[in-house]
Amino acid sequence: MIGASLRLKFVTSNEGKWLEVSRLLSSLGVECDRVNASLTEVQSDDLTEIARRAAVEAYGLFGGPLAVEDAGLFVEELGGFPGPYSSYVYRTIGVSGLLKLMTGVQKRRAYFLSAVGYADLHGSVRVFVGKVEGRISEEPKGSGGFGFDPVFVPENETKTFAEMSTDEKNLYSHRARAFRSLVESLQRGL
Image 1: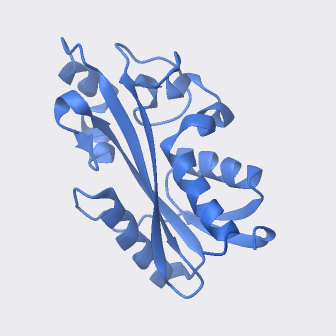
Image 2: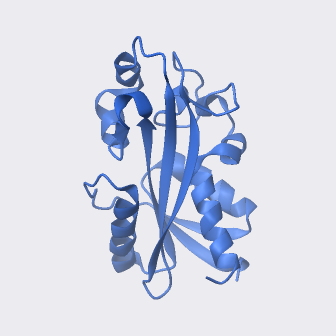
């Protein structure tokens, strides 16, 4: 089922996500076509619910098999903020605003969480989750990636996601872990 015989649509308007996911899926032997579209931004505290509802909407518009993805940065000392609202927070206060909120904070533990909603050929939806633990750096570093990548350092690493190449980031990232879980499930025929 995996390989040239599997073709998956990835619905996203985010160029950075598309570059990461297409490169990862290609390395796993999965053909991927981008559907450059924005879906309804569901307001929920639960990323899996957001991904599930987006996959249902995308299936209704484009058919399957397809995947959608939503992610969030959860900063422990900020009570998990910005979490599922990371995109909005990034657009409104950005990296500098997040660092301002972290001024004087010694405990800088954080994690990225990704939820991939997958709709199969018949519209059945499953959600796959990936998580990467790390910390918020004192200052932004690097020019790669997108969003909060310049301030997130994965556990046991010294570089931010923005300092890593796409392939290097895909070794650690929450998004890559969620998509690997999806591909492994498809390989097992589940």
